[in-house]
Amino acid sequence: MRLPFKKKKEVVFQKVSSQQGFTLENQDRKLTDFRDVDIEDYLADMFITPDQFVVLTAPEPQHKVRFVQACTHDDGIEVELGIEEDGTRLYYKMCSEEECCRIFLDFYEDGFVPDMKEYKPVEF
Image (cartoon, rainbow, N blue to C red; front, side, top):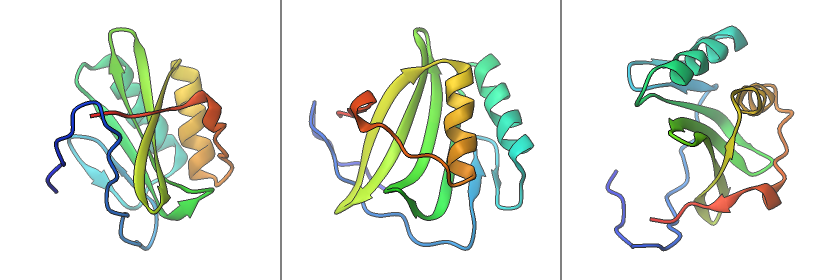
């Protein structure tokens, strides 16, 4: 998919297609059959290895959240939410390893309801 180029603007992406179950992926592989321990392993690898990312996508939006994704930066861990309404918009916040794990696991267990006051729109 080609990203629209708009500098410092919020971008609206197409909605993610429906799927049978959750998918878990990083830059090396994509899983469709996994457990919560696999999510923890993917995240643990991301925390210690530069240039890693993790994406967890739900079969359908949960409380408007279609997917959560994370990557590391020099100043911490960035967690992004794919919020589906009229298209998909990305929102982010910086957090600790513990909070990142909690977000992913809560989302996987359908218990994640984000406080959107904590998140900012991702701008491109």
